[in-house]
Every structure is written in structure tokens, then in C-alpha cells.
Amino acid sequence: MIAAALGVVAVLVVVGVLVFWDDPDTPARRWLLLAGIPVLPGLALLVGASRVMDDAKHPEFCGSCHVMGPFIRDLQDPASTNLAALHYQNRWILRDQCYTCHTDYGLTGPLQAKLDGVRHLLHYELGTYRLPIRLRREYNTANCLHCHAESKAFLGSHDVDPATLGPGEPACLDCHAPAHPEPATRAAAGATP
Amino acid sequence: MKRQSFTYRLSALLMLCALVLMLVTLARPTPRLVGLFLSAGLGAGAAAVAIYVIDVVRELRARRLL
View 1 (spheres, rainbow over the protein chains, first blue to last red):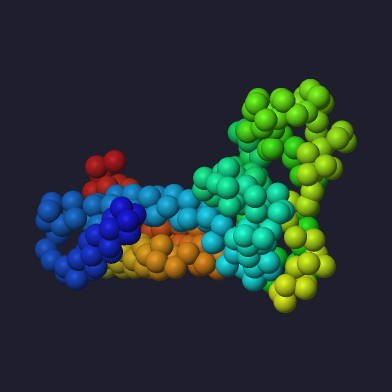
View 2: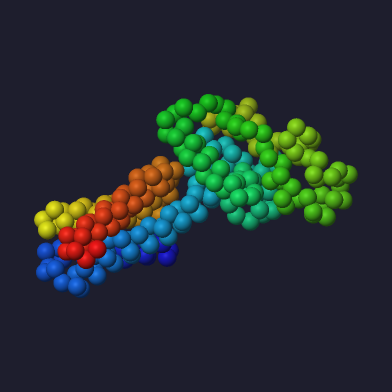
């Protein structure tokens, strides 16, 4: 809301700059140029970009590419027992559920997620993706352990050191799969597998 | 002065395009619009600021204030 309001104000100021373009070259006009071209619109763009990137974390955004439809429908299907649906419907993750599980923690995780997003967008727009869609690399078990490793439920039911779980080792999804509907189920749901 | 007027106006128009694209994307954040805004939109905004700054510097130099 703030981003949109700031954007509207910035548009009005830029339009004002263009309308009063031929005014005499006074100090007031110089200040208007400074505020109306780089300062206020630049600030609005930064706030807007931040807001847009935040919006892009919502599951609805992920579901707006039709290849993701079966995944989103499964998240919301009360009959689904897939891992992602359980996390979504029980609100074990409050918001941005896709982003939370598919973004690595640490300094480079969000950056990598954004680069992945750009790659997904390019493949989607160019039609160069392959079906059934699948993860490019092994799912990072550390993303599960970030929440679960120290939880009472995990410690009470797993006789394993969380540090030993991970790439090349027993992973959460070895026992708790599937996280999402399998390709055959996606096709049966009448959507792109 | 005429050239400067043109570049300032170009800068304002680029910024206007970037802002309009931002508002459209905020209203309807589809992947295509988000991609367009974060690439072309922010690129246009950055170009607008760069053109403005370069022109201010040129003008100050012409007036021997810099």
C-alpha cells in the first residue's frame, strides 16, 4: 500500500515536471527537477521493487505459472497427506510456504533463490522447461532441520544426530516423501504433470 | 541548453515509464510483469538517474562550478 501510494505520488511529480517543463530556469524549478526525477521516483522504485520481491514469495505467485497449478491445488486439498500440504494446511509455516522450504538459509540462500526464480521465469516464458518438472538438485535437508532439528517432536522420535543428515546421507525425504504429488498424480488431476 | 532540455526530459520520461510499470506490477504481480519490472523497469529507472546526474555534472562544468 505504501509502495503504491509512493508510486502514485512520484508519477504525479514526474508528470508535474514534464508539464511545467518550459517554466523559467529558476532555483525552484531546479529543486523540482531534483525531487521529481532522481530523488522521489528513485525512492519509490526501490520501495516498489522491495514490495514486488516480497509479493513474489507468496504461494499464489508461484501458482500463477500453470505448471505449478497441481502443486498449489495439492497444498490446498484437504484430503492431501503430502508433506507440503500438511505444512501448509496446519500452518506449520505461516506464510510464503513455497519460498520458505525452497530457499536455503544463510547468506547466499535468498540470492540463489532469486537467481533460480529468474531462471524459472526464462524457461517458462521461452517454453524450454521439461516435464515433469523436478528439482534441479537434491533437496537441502538443512532447510527441514532449520525448524525441526531442535524440536521436541523431532528429538523424541528420531534417534539420529541432525548433523549426520544431509547430502549423500539419509535425508528427511527418504522417509517422509512425497513432499508433493508424484508426476502421475499430477497428470491424473487433469493438469500439466 | 536545448540538448540539456532534451536529456532532462528523456530522463523524466524514462522514470515515468519505470514508475508506471511498477504500479502495474504492484496491482497485478504476475511472473511476466515482475520479471519485466525488475529488469527493464529498474533498468529504465537507473538509466534515468544516470542521465540526470551526467547532465547535472556537464552543466556544472559548463558553468565552471565544478
